[in-house]
Structures are given as structure tokens and as C-alpha cells.
Amino acid sequence: MNILFVCTGNTCRSPMAEGILKKITIEKDLDVDSRSAGIFASGGSSANENAILAMQDIGIDIEHHVSKNISDELIDSSDLILTMTMGHKDLLIERYPKKRYKIFLLNEYAFGQEKDIKDPYGRDKLEYDKSRDEILKAVEKIYGHI
Image (cartoon, rainbow, N blue to C red):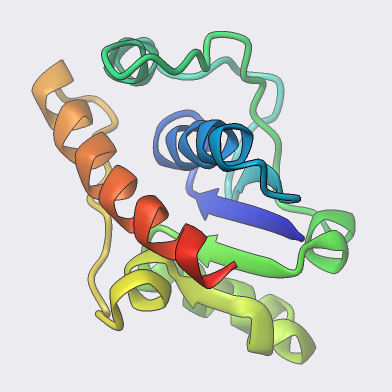
């Protein structure tokens, strides 16, 4: 199974989600490929320093992450697409209406809630920790569905 996490710039939330799921799939020996991309990613950027630090705090290394923009290839090759906000979900469904069946808000897929993961970009590390913890809870919940 190929899971794609999507946020805005692919430097904070979606790389954190990707890193968390990669760790879970290794620990649980699941056949899952975890990737991430951004709706408006410039491509080639590293993960945000506070995102890297927040993930290091829980033993996950995303230091070598390289951002990428959403693409037809990523959409087509993904079995499940999980977005950080309803805005991301709506934009992807608008761009890829025939793929709507596999596009969900992360918290919607995990908990049945239409609740965004707030963007910590430009804020202090505490905000990254909060986003990380919310993403961690959701990703831990979804691995039971896959």
C-alpha cells in the first residue's frame, strides 16, 4: 500500500507524518510505503529545523527529507492520500475529481473528524511539538486501518 501525506510546503506537517508512519511500518513489519508532498512546495527544500527537532525528540530522523510538489504521478501511484487540512483536501479533489475516493483529511480518516492539523510554520518549537503530537495520534490510529 502506498500512502501519501499532503500539506502546503512539504517541510513541516507532511514530512512529520511520513516519518512517523515509516517508523510504525518498520516496527510492525507492514507492507506500506509512506511518502509526502506539498500543494505549493517549491521542491528541493529540507524539512523545517523545528520539525526536525520535534521529530528527533521522539526518535525519528527527517533531517534528509527533500520537499516535493504534488504531481499526477504521486496521485496516481498512491492508494490513500491524507491531507492536513480541509483546504488541501478540497483543492486535491478539485484538481483530481476522479481520485476523490482515495483523498481524506488525516483526522477524518483516523477519527471521523473534520479537524485540520494546524500549520506550525514560522512558529516556535512548542507549536511544532503540538502538531507532531496530533499527527502522531492520528497516524497511530490509521495504521490499524491499513
